[in-house]
Image 1 (cartoon, rainbow, N blue to C red):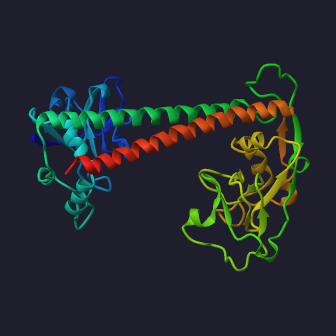
Image 2: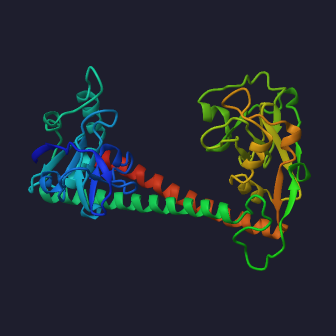
Image 3: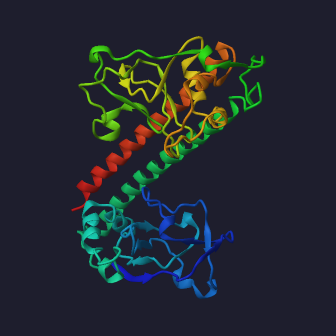
Length: 387
């Protein structure tokens, strides 16, 4: 099925020259298997002598060593003029076979098993060109290959479309978070809805909330919650895959009711001063006294939820607290935390700001669901359409 297997160009990468692209293992997206167009580079070599390393329509690349061994990519003209690097192997498919069909076979469970077994080495895993040539799979007529290949390419294109839409929406939200709330030391945001002109007030957190000190008497509630910077308020067992707390002794835990806010002092890349999240589970649970739980009043909860998605309040935390004795935990006294300034416009403007972010998040969730359905569809077809 393949005319030849060839190893890539033994050359370092240099600044992108605007025309000649260089693809390395790390430039192939792990999920979509597309050529990542961000951070492009060019090969640092005399390209007049490198024509053999220039990809052509239908060429398939394979990673030959390391943790990414087995990762594959099929070249498309839309990717431009592309040379391939030394840790990749190029397969040039014979004209009597459909390269898209062959490529899709590298996304199957059968191929994964082949890679797992074949790549075993005494050192780091690897598969050479001769070993890749030994991968076997069933092949129908050229016409049927083409039809199957086209079907999967259409699915891949649709998946890529939803991924781009998702990324666009996430960037839109990120931009709005920066522009719909006033920056530090300012009292109006960069962008406002029509008919709102008044300056925003600065209110302290304890003016719009009360610290929750309600204990879980007699173990009334048995679901322990946690506050994840990435996923928000979530069931502890779902997050950690095990129970951290002792269900028989939750009397000392605080009760977290619907729409309560929770500050988690644990820091991470997602939350450098710890996350503040809202309980949107629609049910009551309990949390460790290590968390600061507060219940709001006289402020729109959705507005406040998205305000805590910004980094504006981080400045107050960094000025008033510290990283603490533990490197993974931020330290700030409750008496100081509750004085955090909260920028507050009129309730009508709060509602409009909260509404636009909710619309964006709902649209993100819709595209995410469609994306997951398409990925599930493709996974099922890969199992059923290849022998």
